[in-house]
Length: 562
Image (cartoon, rainbow, N blue to C red; front, side):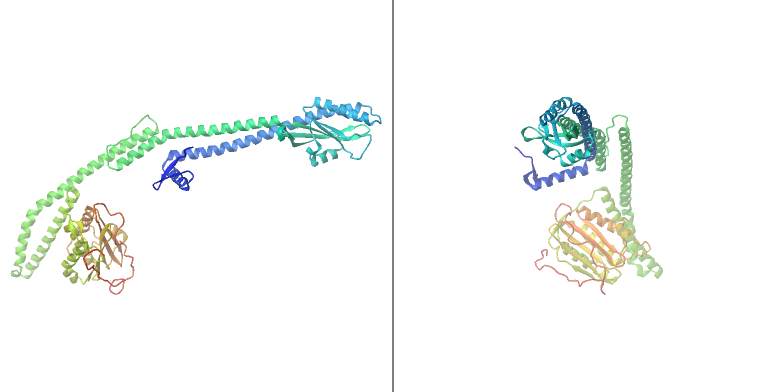
């Protein structure tokens, strides 16, 4: 006999294996979570089956009790009629002191008892057990024996003291092949003149009632099972008519969210689902129209920024040349004019940097940025940037330290853009580090290489950290900018990191400084296994230098990654 097999962990298993049952349970659990139709049908079937089981059990018990009571009443009536006739025969008989005649009298009533009742199983037992030569012990017929009568029933019959009282009890009657059949026995007294009372028992076979009850119960269970299946099928097809449009709406929504703005729902009929479909399509039309308008507006804005930036470069170049010449001869001017010349020269330089950043941002918006990849050591690049900004750090009283246990092996990157990221991060750390030490950490693993810039300055709140990469955003607008940034540095840095399929994350806490972590993948796939350096440095208390541990600069002797 073939058995169904499933594939688990690359091997085929059958139902005899525990993995087969676990796989089935997982599939059912997945189907339960993801399928509204399956979940509703299962709930409907369970509740329907439970209701039908309760109803069938109640009906079967009610029918059984009613059938038993009916047959019991019928047996009592039948026994009463037969016993009354036999007692009338006994009362009219003339009994002499002859044991044979008395025995014949008792034997003569057996025939009428069987004829006038619906059973031939009778048993008569003398109430007074004292031996007597005149009184016969009784009689029996149809296979009914004294052992089949319970002692409790016999006690009730013996103690009744009247021929009018009847007692009934369920018994098991012998059947063919040592089987048993359900029955009921009725007991009461009869009185033989000049002899005394006898216990008289009539047993009735209830096998036909049992067969009727079995048929009724089987019919109930068959009809109940058929109802469960039928209700399940009805629920399945009904839910299919409802959930199919819902599933189509979900699929269409997913396509719409993925960017396919032209997808629409098919509308059939005029019911509530059709109204939902028309409303969904109207919403999709509105979203598509608004997105197209926003896209056109964004394109116009990008072109405007790009065009304005390009147009400003020529007059800005002329102004810069003029300010350079004036700045070169500022010693010849009076102090007020010389100071104005210095301020003009500084602001023109800042304006030129801002214009360059705006052009870079417009290229990102237009999607026209191209990387110029070449193998570069991130640790060496960090050393160069730190060396170039050493004088600026000394001016702010900051001690920049490099910790590089890894990151020496070359990784394909655009060195100009990565150097710009490191300069932006280090410049911000110097400006906001409040003269405390700054730690630049470089490390790597098999999937990625990372650089972290940690300062111990005033830090930022969580809300500020979430907006730190926004364009032109500043945590404290009133704080003086000492380096002369444009407010676009971190936004451009995030774009450069994303362009490399890397990430740029930030951790910051007021009073404990900030930690920026740049992570670059070694290959062409995005970083998935996590960064070699944690974003949260995990230190809340600092020592006198602003550091939790002494800084040890470690470099592999062979220039490879540690």
